[in-house]
Amino acid sequence: MAGKFTKCMMLCCSAKEPEDMGSESYEEAIAALSKLLSDKADLGSVAAAKIKQITAELEAAADPTQFDPVKRIETGFFHFKKEKYEKNPNLYGTLAKGQSPKFLVFACSDSRVCPSHILNFQPGEAFMVRNIANMVPPYEKTKYSGVGAAIEYAVLHLKVENIMVIGHSCCGGIKGLMSIPDDGTTSSDFIEQWVSICAPAKTKVKSENNELSFSEQCTNCEKEAVNVSLGNLLTYPFVREAVVKKTLVLKGAHYDFVNGKFDVWNLNFQIIPTLAV
Amino acid sequence: MSSSDICRSNTGVKLKASIEPPALTWELKGDKQESIVEMESGCDLFDEMKIRFLSFKKHKYMENSEHFQALSKGQSPKVMVIACADSRVCPSNILGFQPGEAFMVRNVANMVPTYESGPSETNAALEFAVNSLEVENILIIGHSRCGGIRALMSMKDEVDSSSFIRSWVIVGKNAKQITKSAASNLSFDQQCTNCEKESINCSLLSLLTYPWIEERVKKGVLSLHGGYYDLVDCTFEKWTLDYKESIMDRKKRVIVRNSSIWC
Image (cartoon, rainbow over all chains, first blue to last red):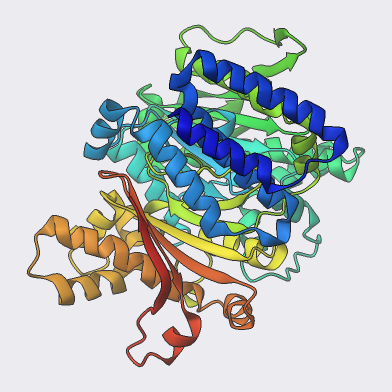
């Protein structure tokens, strides 16, 4: 174990000459690590794995043009296998037989907002749909069946207990929606048509927040669009039924990565009996 | 706040939805944890979510604040990933993608419909990733024990519009056909496994029906890859589409290169 770590150390140290400015803090850090490992030799292989990952990240950062996606995922996969899969045989044995997540999560495809990072969802916890601007279209059999399939599977087959729609700051899809000209002309094949699902959010923001800057309006629209999607969820009969029976809870959320905040809110509903005429 | 009536008169009730103002903002100011409004009691799951977010913020976000500030100005991922919505196969977990690295679409059975099939969530995302973000790689990741593929293999051949699941997974009908003709002697489970992999290749070919994708692949600025995660054995197989060879193949199969399996 200690032997493997030493080899890793040598690779790190011989890779590149550290700049003078950084060399002291680097050597101090290595000295501290060596001391720790001389006291706790069993941490050697953990340290070796982490150093390998740091080395790969620094190589990629040092020369972004050399990003090798295959090497990147290979490192990532072996790290997962070693640190998670092999250390939790009971969990992964159970998951091999089936999944029973408590959440259906809608999140944006944006590379910065994966709920597995920000909410630390582990394998098995959340059935996750990711699309542009985390949108849920209204119930309509002939169009956007992909989203309908995910909701149907999650609610009827997996019987999730919670649906959470998570919007986020600086959303390109929402900005695109807010940028569609008033005459409705579009220049894309699919994007503008897709984000127009949340056109009611844009209408609301434009009418109520017209005095705000474009960027503030976009922020408001990010949250209003979540509300539109929550309302659209209720147009699916199987969602409505589960919500009324209280076997399903709907929540809206907004992740602000500029300020490091996370808002969560509820969807309230009332059942109003229709009047017989 | 706003309220919208969702009227379904045939159910005999009206469902009126209203949105409360944000019930809780989770912030970490220095070492002090603040909550604006108390959460509803009985929300143990969301208490857990709050703890996790604050932990992410403390241990990742604040410790890498320069990196996250840079990310907040814009994203430039080099990879677009299309993966299944299955809770067990998030690429951030199994492949270690970090914030900023991968633009990610997740749908049932990681399928890509063709350009001609009209608007879908998946092709809107493709258009954004390829034309706006200019990703250099698209990676489609399938997996074992896929419920969506199982549904596809279990379906009778006629399109059944009573179910969203069936209306969606029919996107994979070519993969099912190929599997049935090549592997009908195998058990149903084995056929599903075949179909899981075949479907990835069919989706890779679907990617090439998008003119702005094919153009970039031809020019060599965009590469298309397939990946298969076996969640029983924890192995990962990956391969890259060889565009030139695939185009020339008379049977229109996917020809691959650089394939390997990580065990």
